Image 1 (tube, helix red, strand yellow):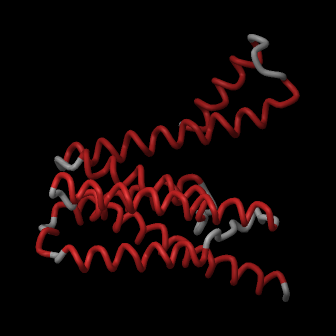
Image 2: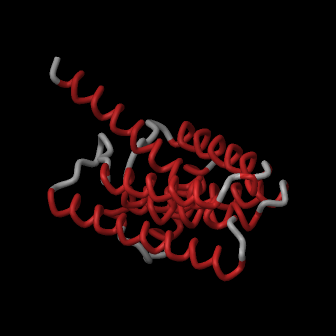
Length: 199
């Protein structure tokens, strides 16, 4: 469905002369990614809305998206598998937000967030098999990851202090956990790929 819609949009834009025909496949790929991202965001927010956790899901998606883009990590081989993994993560996050997390002491949340932050920064960026990074790209992605993590941490702590609400810190912790786990799985996948290439 997503591929078909991306193909229709690309063909229409090329036929109208708004896009060059020799770059049709590039724009098809861009439209396909854009539609898939919009679909996943709307689905995630919809699931959050159904469970009464729309704000929490929005916070999670913002934190996750800001870091994941530069930190790298596991990438599924197919779009369908990627969507299934994304939906599973969303359902897990909504479920965890339905639990009574206020019983977790604030100082434990703070320590966990700081440890996760250092873990993500330390291994960033994790390359994808089909998109190796050169030295400059790695450096740029690591700096962007660091900046975004610092920004999220500052905002989450300020939010907690000003509004006496730890939901932002909790969802930042969940986002950091998801990113770090995907980084670890990405490193394992890359390791196995490189070992199989050497045989």
